[in-house]
Length: 545
Image (cartoon, rainbow, N blue to C red; front, side, top):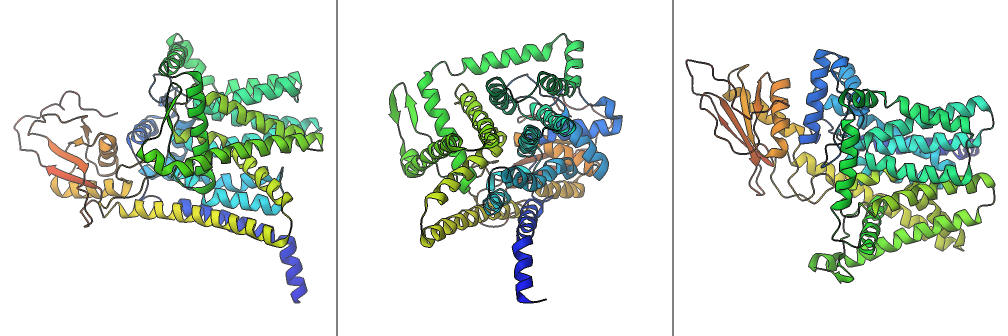
């Protein structure tokens, strides 16, 4: 094969090789040391307990409702439990097997994101944005453990891609197929995170009303599919007399009443800052912004705020820039198809921004997993407009250098996070702030298993063990002991008096020093039971759920 043939081959198929490399890199960063460094806190332990017991009792024993919406009695749909149930059946009852759906969807997001981006951009820009997703600190963090919001990037991307494909087609069958796929995605999104479906619902509703891209029958089909996916929730409502609907009203009232001390302009400014910080995080992987506090019309910037102020201002400028770039790209769009697609993306983003205003003081990082598609597209539009205005090879080379620098920065942040998760198993050394633990010590499944293994040396087989101590991990510790090491028992919240006739395991954060400790960031104390002539019941308040 001649050199010219090789060059021609790479020119024709180089983008395929690049995409495969991007997906392989992204997969490796999500898979490496996955089980040992899996995060399993109280929420994860709760879900795993529910699903693992359903695996023993049968699918029918799964609850009709899913996880709770944070800080309320409202519950989502059960689709997340269904994913975990199937995964547990396929891969066994090991703790990490219940997290595989989020891992799989996190990996599949990358090629799907590329397909969506090609709807708007050239191959090189689409590949760069896909590479950004591949090494993204945010996406990697939320792909490496099981939680109901974690699959939002995949299903929102699937929705955006299939919905836009439906609008592109005039063939009735193909159009209906893509509408069905987009409706299924919407029904799943609604059961993964409440804010995700509300933000999408506002944007999609405005788009359908303003542009009328769907026929009435297609709208009815879309709604019917979404409702069909909520059949378990409707059955629960019928059986309970609408308890979950009442919980929704109470949750909405509670969320609205929590911020009565802040004026609308304070909430708007706060929401803009939060969205700006999330945009900065998604682009750079850095958590170096801070919130400028307000009290009425007064602005307060404390020591931490002042230190982060340059980055905070850059983040706010970045968000403003991509919104302006999105508007200008929409305004200058020549083809009706592109204008319609950009209208949909902009309205989706606007819908989410409007939603965050009343929620400004309750926003958390996971909320922004629902706007990965519109944010990536808006970032791409910004890069596209900058590139179109640059004249000369030097300027474009600088833009390319900046793009590579951003990817390297994200890669460095993500790999540092994985290294710290690994180190936490053997060292109590202080680690940097991250998206899941904040400034608290990192704790992983590997550590819990090490403690459980050590427990087998102190406690006789099949004897109950009562777990107390650090509340974030007591439930997870109980699950690992009971399901993987044959130590039934229960866990207690708080420091309770436990009869001496029971084995007791106390877990706490380890002292913060730079020398390796037995269980890394966790310490454990093992107190074997004192033999008793009569078997005592488990202490009052000892939990197994």
